[in-house]
Each structure stands twice: as structure tokens, then as C-alpha cells.
Image (cartoon, rainbow, N blue to C red; front, side, top):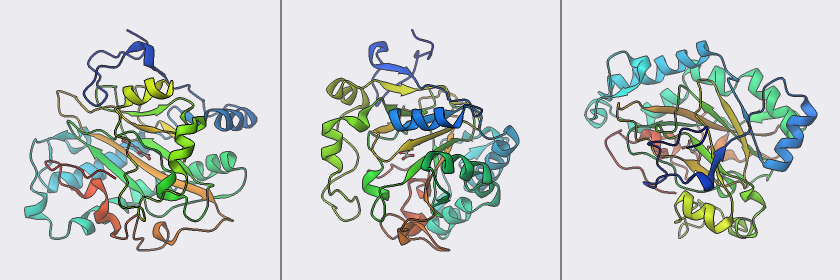
Length: 305
Ligand SMILES: O=C(O)CCC(=O)C(=O)O
């Protein structure tokens, strides 16, 4: 047992081993700016508890789960986000990509993902005025879902290397519901550095960004602990393009859906990848919001990139 309450948690079906799992370090929002920058430079992530308010989070939950209720995927009070165990999305929604686009562009979500507060925080990390990508990755992870080990370099660095990911928890995410993990110091590992060299997910279609190793296998091979935490509503984690990350499995027996969003920020002054900017961004593969796992009905398998 650790402070992380590992009981019942799973990493790609495996029970977390205390030796290889630790808690993310918290960086409270009132930490001095120099210290925030120092931690980000050294550790390639900062985790800021309760960066966003409960009111902001509730608004997003009501909006997103309200849409999923119309697709027969959420039962009872939508804000609770409880999966029905089936989906009517294909039967009830004509265009799944357009459905996901409308949800991803919802005002209650955008005023958080593109808030002044998050811009200001990313300005600190980037050391200059930032701009958010317009294309965002909203994720609804029901029972059994998980994100495999990967880093974001091959997705977002075509125009500039200077991109960071902001990950936001829209709800309570105990370990059993599959919160984000990062592999401690993995950004410095020669194998990780080698794996990103000349790799572009959309161009190198014969290769996947996702590693074939489970998180615990990767941890042992690289000697990097899996760092995670029981995420609370409004928690923010910002991390670099190189650091390996993924999620624990959602194995919540009560069918609570994990709701999160990840959005990229970069310096406003640097070149912008047109796939992720503009009123109708094409996304990584050019198919727009329809290419995201969020656009897949909750009773169907996710693709692997
Ligand atoms: O939220 C997750 O499950 C994974 C997030 C992720 O891969 C990312 O933000 O790049």
C-alpha cells in the first residue's frame, strides 16, 4: 500500500507494484514562478491541484454528459456521468464527427480549455505569450478504457518543437477510474530520444506512437517510475512533448465515466501547424473531430495510434 491507494487499480490489466509506482508531485498554483519553471524544466511536468473551479467543472460535465445522454450512453442525472452499458449513438446521430465537433466546441468547455488563466500559466512555462491549439482532445473513458504508453512528440511538433500539453480533469478520478500517469524522467532516456527522431505519426503510417510495452514493463525497462494521483475536479497537469505517459485502466465497478480534455499550447510567435488551428481543423490525420476516440460510441473499441 502507498498513499496512492493502489488497491483495485490496474495498469493495462496488471496490478501496480509499489516499487514502480509513485505520486505525482503537486505544484500549488501560488508556487513562485521561478520554481514552477525550474520544476517543469527538470521534470517535464507540473501538476497543479484544483486549477479550475468546481463550477467550471460542473458546467462541462452537464454539457458533455447531457449530449451523451441523448445518444443513450449516460443514465440518470447526466452530471454524475454513469454509463448505461450500451450506446444508441449510431442509431440516433447522423454524423458522428459533427456530433463530436459540437461537443468539443461547447462554450462551457472552451471557456476552460482556452481560458485566460490557462494561457497565463502556459505563458509562464513557455517564457513568452502562448496560444492554444483550436483542435482539442476531449476524452470520455468508460469501463475498460485506457491510454497506452506514448509521448506527444510525433503528433504535434511538425511546425515547432516548442509545444506543451495541458491535461484537465473534469471530475473526480480515483486510481480505479484510470487517471493520467507519466513515466518519471522518461524524457531524458536515450531510448525515448531515439524513438522520436524523425517520427511523425501521420506520415509514418507503418509505425504507432503507442508502445507495445505495458506501463509496468516500460517502467522496468527504462527504470522510470509510473507517477500518477487520485485526480480531483479541476486538476491540471501540463507536460512536455517528450515525456512518456498514458492512463491507468478505468475499472470502476459503478460505471463512472472518466471525463478529461487535453489541449496543446505553444508560443504565439512560432509557426503553427494548420492541422490544429482554424475554424475547422483537420486534426492529426485530416479527418477532423471524427478521427478522435471521443467520436467512437461508448460500446465500441478504440483505435490505436
Ligand atoms: O488522458 C489520457 O488518457 C491520455 C492523455 C494523453 O495521451 C495526452 O494528453 O496526450
